Length: 289
Ligand code: BTN
Image (cartoon, rainbow, N blue to C red):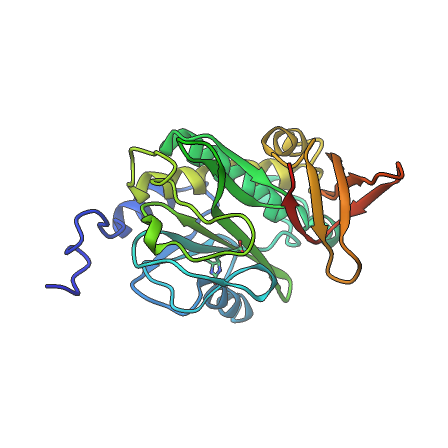
């Protein structure tokens, strides 16, 4: 019985059939929701499916991930059923006349992980009833009852040919002693942040529905983040705007300054002490104050 997914009453398995029935409905973008007991990485699985020709709207959710990938070659570690680990398959370059969706040029695909962040923050606030903001580009921050920010979720976007795989890892019922050590912002979970609900099914539904709304609007406008309201929503959710930051850049010295905004391309705008403004499209941000 020890290995049964029902042994830990605190962490029941996802209701795969009910999720499928609720989300894979006529007119919806979700075509298939595979809930797997265990895999290496759902991002790797969905990228493989993309290479094999799977269409937009595939979702793979793992109850346990043993080789979860994070940004910048880090790992994503989570005990079985303690959180949500899932990836979705998108083909933003493929027009869909039936929905009035244009092909979005690849130069705009960089908005997708930010869009997923907005959808995730919205779902968490609604279902888990905890405050949730975003650290640029898309770490989900929640605040513990005693104060202090922690990262409860991360998003990893990877391009697989002409598809985009978006992976989300969200810590839901993870206990303090199960959270991985970090060098930067501490890891946390919705439970540690005071959420009374550790039920992953409504969270997953809310996330996929919210994502579908934002993605539909973004596609209808040909990927114009301003026109579809995404830029405004992102700026509202982004806790990095207005903060003093240190940005670790992939190929240059770190940048220290104050964040003035996020621009129409999703880039972070940092004003350094000499008054110059720098636009950052990739980097690791530390909130200094
Ligand atoms: C980060 O903050 O570094 C991003 C973490 C993304 C983790 C998720 S878990 C589901 C999906 N599959 C993976 O291998 N990674 C992403």
